[in-house]
Each structure stands twice: as C-alpha cells, then as structure tokens.
Length: 485
Image 1 (cartoon, rainbow, N blue to C red):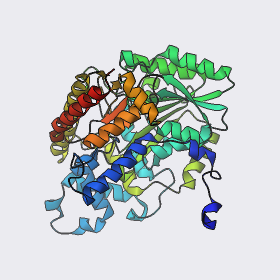
Image 2 (image 1 turned 180 degrees about the horizontal axis):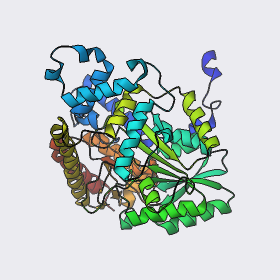
Image 3 (image 1 turned 135 degrees about the vertical axis):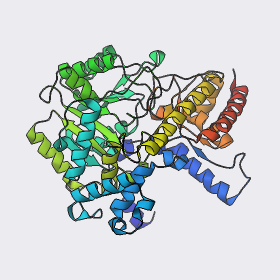
Image 4 (image 1 turned 90 degrees about the horizontal axis):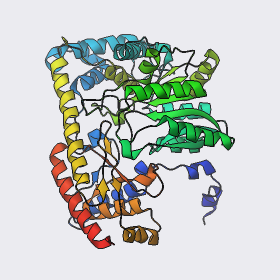
C-alpha cells in the first residue's frame, strides 16, 4: 500500500459512516451506471438499448417537463435585467413578471447569488407561511420555517438535535425511506422499527407503535421521536384522518416529537383519500404549540413539480421552547443558508398561480396533466405486477412508487444465498442485466423478515410504460421458469 493510502483506511474512518447505507443509490445503481457506460462504448452488446432508472424519485431525469410558471419566475429572478427589456411581455406571462418583481423586492440587494438569512429569506418564509395557512385553515408563523436544500438536510438537522447516543431511539416505519436509517446511523442513534401492515394496504397500527415503544424502553432506549411518511415511501399509502388523530394522540401521550415527512402531499391518486398535514390534524384536535413538538418536512423535488436538482425544501418547527429553537437556528447557521433558487421554488410551490391569474389555466393544465398521467402509470404498473406469478402489489394511493412483494421459489432463494445476496437483490440484479430496468431491493428499505420486495417508481414517461411492462413480464416468466421449485 502507498504511504498516502495508509493515512486513511476503511478501518480508521468513522465507523458510523461504515454502518450507514443508502440503497436508493446502492450497489444495483452502481452496476446500472457501469452498464450505461458499456451501452455507449459497445452498442448492441446488451439485450436492451437504454437503462431505465426506476430506482429513485427523480421525475425530470425521466422526461417530465418543469412547470412553466415556476421556471419563468426563476429565470427573471436570476437575471433581473430582463425585466427592463422591451418586449419582455411577449416572452413572459404578466403574473410571472409580477411575481418575480415581488420576490426580488424581498431579497436584499435583489441578489440571488448572495447568502441569505440562515432560516431563509424572510419574505419567502412569509409567502410559505401564507401557503401553509391557506392549505390547512390554521395560521402559520414564518419564524417557524427553516428553508433547506431539499428535505434531507432538515431531517439530518433534527437527528443531530435529538440523538445524544445509541441509547436514544427514533421510531421509524418499516419499510422506510433509507434516509432515516442512514441519518440515525450517522448520528449514532438507534432505529426503533415499527412494521406497516401489508395485508391492510400498509396500515399503521397504534398497537404496533405501542408494542415497539415498550420493547425499546425495556432495553433502556429513550425513544425521542416518531417518523411518519405520508403519503408513504416506498409503500404509497395515504393515511386516513382518523388514523392521523390516533398518531397525534400517541405522540402527545408518550412525549414524542412527531417528525412528519409530507414531501408527497401533492401526489394523491385515489378519489377516496386526501392529504391532511399533521399540523392541520393537531390544530383541529385543539392542540397548540404547548401540546406537541411537531416538525413537518416539505420539498420541491416531488409533487407535480419534480425539481430535484434545484434542492429546495423546508421544515416547519412547532412546539419547541425558545431555548431549543436557538439551538436549531445555530445548526442552520453552520451551513450559512440554503440555495436561493431552491428557496424561491419553495415559495412558488406553496403559492402557485390562483384562479384569475394569467398563467392559471396553462399552469393547471400542466399540473393536472402530470398528476393524471402518474395515476394512470401507477395503475398500469400495479396491474402488471399483480398479473405476474408469485407477485402481489398493493394499490398506490399516493407518492411515486410501487412496492410489490416477491413470493420467490426456494430454488431462487438458495441461488441468491450461493452468491451472498439477499433474494430480492438477486432478483433486481437479474432484472437489470436482462432488461436494463433499475429497481431497488426491498431489503434496502426494511421489510418483515422472510418477505421480499422491490421498489419501482411510476416515473418513466407514459409512452414507455407498455414496453417496460412487456420487458418485465418476459423477464419474470423466464426467471420463474429457471427457478420454479
């Protein structure tokens, strides 16, 4: 080994980094990137001509167009001299021009390339608070809002705040989005799992929460918070209002912080469910700041906007003392501020064009077109998975994913063991090598022991869905033919 390479070795780095895993960009995806390179260097070498990344909720990478109004406002804010050009009204809608001017008026020096307040630009937080109030019917305070580079840094910030040692635990759903397990591991805490019930459409049972809380406490773990992902990732369920009330009461009675991941709040595909924020539920129950510590996460990466690369998001922090709020602000200030384009987008997402605005009709056509197409894609893929031998798939009520269960033959499970792979990872690798379709093994999200799943996004463009289904069916029939007991 070279002398420089001996300075830092895998054995000498922080063990928490080794413990941390993030399956969404894990081994399968790294292999897919190698295959993509081979497709460029050796056309015709593989039985497919493109890699279809169904592993991550990254809509624009799969062809979704950005929302015109949002991009017009962003362009004008980033290049304000355009506002002084003759003919500007021929290029941009009047309400996009007006909104850009409003936003520039609240940015010190109209400089989108400058640092902002560590919680985010005050005028943009005002706009987000107004949007939350409009959504929920209850007031929101701009001082409770911390703008972040997507929702992920906000989650890390809360884990940093709450976890003191491995004796501090966070209740997380299983299956869960691996950001949570990774963040808990990095900050040295303990993940306390609670299992969603696949047989009831990934139901969240209070009895299960209580059972897992009691088990953790009996082991000397201080459980600090409960994570709820609604709509669910990777499971796609939307919580009923009554269930949310039970969760709020559970957190209040047990002295837990409620961490509400609500980044898919616009992604609802069924008529009998609607999104209700946990803050709205808590306030409707008569609970105020003094009753429940609640942190709500939102992002510009999901919904109908899918602006993942712009890295915008926020957390709304309520129910914490002024002294603790100071510490949260200190954590935010270590990062100086989140990026300004993301801040602007977060304000637009929470305050899109309204009826009567010049852009409203075209905006609504874009929004509804994306959401209705996602609903059709979800239904088509769900039906396809359920048509496969040994595969069952719950309805995708919301979010951007399906999480079908693979009832694999024992022969396939043994073949996976022989190559030291989890059976669902073995299936996902074989699927990728045969079809170019990238999915994530369910073992990366957690699952009931002895069950196997994959997570597949509904994001490939609608005209590609039939070909994906065809490839999937052909592969699965061959796989089952090879391994059927």
